[in-house]
Amino acid sequence: MDIKEIQSLIKFVAKSGASEVKLEMEDVKITIRTGEVGSKGETTYIQQVPAVAAAPTAPAAAAPAAPAAESAKPAASEDSKYITVKSPIIGTFYRKPSPDKPVFIEVGDTINTGDVLCVIEAMKLFNEIESEVSGKIVKVLVDDASPVEFDQPLFLVDPS
Image (cartoon, rainbow, N blue to C red; front, top):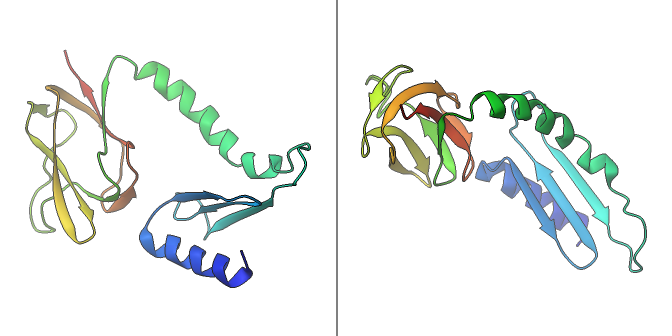
C-alpha cells in the first residue's frame, strides 16, 4: 500500500463520520481515529508487520486507548443496575425530530416499549430509534448532533 492510497483512505474515513477504522492486510496494519471528543484532528497509526514472528512493535499504538478504558470501569459498576439502550446503527444522533421541535425524551421521563427515544441520521435517512424496554430515563450518554457508532450506549434506563 503506497502513501497516496493511505492518504485517500484517511480522507474517506474522515468524511464518513466513523471515529475509528482498523485495516489489516498481509504486511500492514493501519488504525485511523477521527472525531474523538478532546482530540485534535486525526490520529493514524501504521505498523509494518514483520515476515518472521517477532516481538510486536506497536505498544505505542495501544497506549492511547488504555486511559479511556480505565476511566470507563468505575462508571460501569455504579450504572450496573440500569439497562443501557445502545445504537443499532452508525450515524448522527439527534434528540429532536427537527430543530424547531422539543426533544423526544428528557432525563426523568418514563418510557414504554415502542416509544421513540431519538433519531439517528445515516446516509441522509432519519431513523427513529424506539425503546425496547420500559422504565425511567436516568441519563443521556450522547450529546445532540454528535456521531455515534454501532452498539454505542445512548441512554441509561431504570427498569424499576
